[in-house]
Length: 209
Image 1: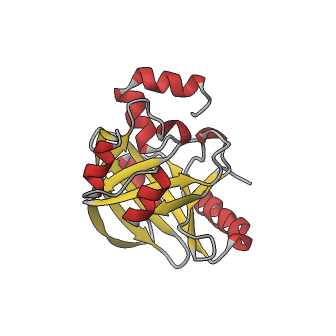
Image 2: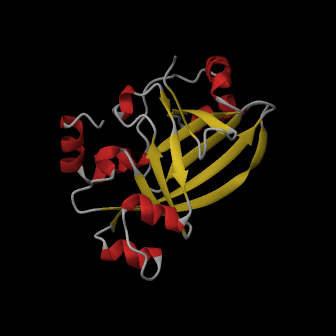
Image 3: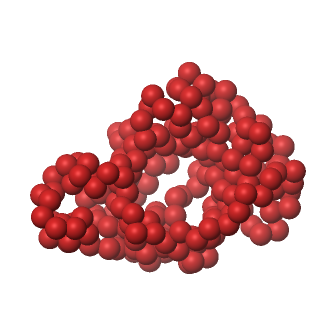
């Protein structure tokens, strides 16, 4: 199977298979031709971790997105990010579930409980996202406030049996529009590469990247 990524909240519910790719502004007319423009929104993500980056080392993401906490947990946690064929993430948004997963006692607000347990912000990333769609494809084009751009081709599937078909649809779309498929760092790891080079080097040595 090709290097396709995706996540799901619960595997028995519809979920997205998605593939990241890099792009330049000059690519936009070719990439978006014939698609329906859905709209644009701004996402501000504040990422939290412990002082030794225990979550990041397991490719887990704890973020506050526009005021809502989310914890993304990889289901293929035995593989480095670059080695994954399909990235299935469970997305936990219930605050009590986040506390239970991180073994945090509920005392006050989740933000205060996280601070008391040693979780602190280490990156704030603002993303401008433009969304497009066709009958069977969703396309997100993200530009981060530190100059990084990545796109995501998305296909919604009902269950894992449809995964191979979704991969074929994504790869065909990429081929038709001249999108080069190769490993692309997510925005958190690109942020770390640019602003936390010592941590990035450690993650490479540990096989996380």
